[in-house]
Image 1 (cartoon, each protein chain N blue to C red):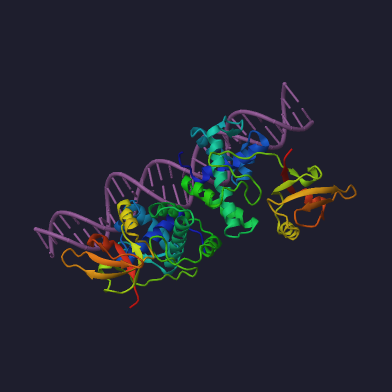
Image 2 (cartoon, rainbow over the protein chains, first blue to last red):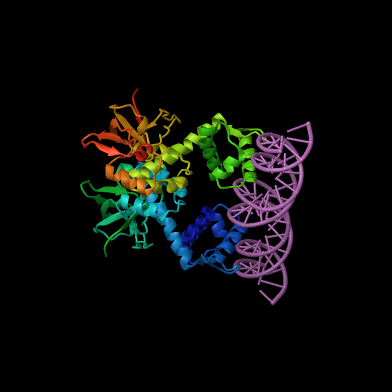
Length: 221
Length: 221
DNA sequence: AAATATTTTTAGACAAACCTAAAAAAAATA
DNA sequence: TATTTTTTTTAGGTTTGTCTAAAAATATTT
């Protein structure tokens, strides 16, 4: 595995995230994502094409090659393992974790990451609930749905929280909801679309539609 | 505290190490240390001078300013804490630790380093026995001597091992000597300058002159 | 002290990653 | 479909950190 610059890695990662939604990614989209200018994106795409990390024809957008996707998963693995480390071992809060991991993810020693993984006990999700690719680049893709879309009375595990503002975290802390929390939706109220949910060992409680749409969970079908 | 590039940080660190020995550092010395060319060093010195990190007059060598020294200690702190982490938590061997720490040391979050320090239990020495500066940049400077120069029957703590080849590490492992090991020198043999040493809970043993000259320790006077 | 050798600096280039402004292509609209 | 708008690319420039080759300063030797 060759060595790539921080900048190249950031482009690869951004393309990976954008193409999850989009399929093919455009110059403007990527420029916006990376807080850079379209001209800079074009420059970089030419370079990444010669390195065979992306498929790219002028004016027709781009997507990752197999090589590119592999690299993206390596970077995402590093990022999420560091996030887990920061939160779990160093007691960083969810919001702080991301910025620091942005730097750490570019330290490229494979041995470092694999040993870190082992040290952490091979965690499968980062503190935000996103899945961590394993040493072979395999990543759990099981679909998660927001609480609104959970079937009633079905045990589910909180796997992701999309808004992570301080206000949100305050509310989540108060309600004792975090990644990994097991819960069931007991009732859906049509009046305001609020939900009655039940967490093991706790009283049932009501959560607003707004909150419920920002909490995602997984369940067995 | 401003933010410096990886390259600037490497120069600062190299100057710090060279001036320990030399007092003032020359262009060629620094170029050799950093595997770069003298012309590149001159360029960088001009820049570091405008940033007030070094004192420098053309043709007359350079040394760190107070600011520069502070920065050097921050970088050394990062480096040695990561080394400790890698060895202690991730079970890297002594030799592997340095190269990876070279990358990690440039991640500049102060909070990260201070929390790492806390997580590690505020270690005072890295795996090579070099002292770790504290959060204020204070670094232990107490003199260490090689085993040959230890007074007899005086408790001392192994603080540094100068040769770290595999052969040396194999021997040290066998003799159960590592950084932090408490020992006493019981007898010095004039015939071959070998030493009889005693480690707590172990039988006394004989170590060669060659080995003894590569092991350093500290003791209270 | 003069000549020679060494060290250091300057001058000018280059690659990486970015930028602005203008040109070209594609998409949207009349 | 022709025109206008938007998107993307090209052209040319900047900064950082490097380089080589030549010039200048300092050190060493005779």
